[in-house]
Length: 470
Image (tube, rainbow, N blue to C red; front, side, top):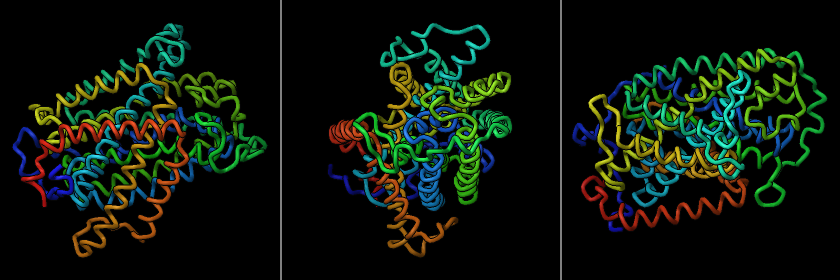
């Protein structure tokens, strides 16, 4: 652990040989699409049902709280991403600002986050795909669309979509980003159709009682309810913008493109979420779609809008892979940068002739396919949130440290009211972490014990910090 407190240079990636450097191929429209593609997905298409089961009609308040906390973290991300335009997101910022050991903890949290998000969204996609296939008379046996925890054998559609997205990323970053942008438009159109069809059925009486399970987390371990218990789970729905930060090295104009991508995608998605959540709860009693694997399509079917339901399900099947693509992209870049820094095997940090890290992409695909095939959605989402909240706290802290340490450093984007915003983001994320299920907190602790063991046995001994530390 001789380099545990070593800090990496901001421009360390520029000294890397060509086979360890990523190409600048992305502009701000690609990044906005990447952010919207990551944010608008399983959270609103699937987890709204999980959130409604925990909070009732006040799931709308849960969305608002999670969105506000996430927006504060997004502002911190935008400032850090433009100051340190290198791939690696929160891991790289922590390495540059604080040091290697905490950077490893944050990097391990990001690996946990992205692996579980890709797996969770693949499971959510599987729910819509199975429902859509059944509606057209081509349903699969239930044993092949659910993992062992839900009585099945393996979630085959979830594994299938991971393999498809991995193939797209191997094809190339710019090519996959362009396909992603087209699919994002399909997804936004489907949500607009949902709101338009559901609004005529809006009934304010369905919001009474508004907060049936109270505000704070309550209930037995594993079955916690309340506004904050729901917010801690559906927080998953908002944090796709951090995938944009992992693209810093591949942005053509990082100072401009990253801030537009992060802040723009976040603002757009908060508006979309609030409209969809209000329309959903107002159209149908929450108890009828709580915990459904395809709640929005179910709502439309219950309203007698079968054609619109089929269209929504088909759009989800086509467009949910944009979320998988965005987070899979982020996961592969985190792995790539940690391997490039020597904390993981360096032979994984090689790019192909097309500029994509093929080895790390295949390794990531195997990992997330196993998780998606075997573990239920709600458990995946909760554990992913624990990793994300850790990263958000780290980024907000890094922003405040740099405001004190380097007040005159050039900042292409400056967070307004930096200290109140940064402190609010840290405290808000900490409260959401406390609101997670107790079993999730325990699994998170176990995962980090394993992560620290890997660092002590491998990463700390092979780190390049001795050559690149500040």
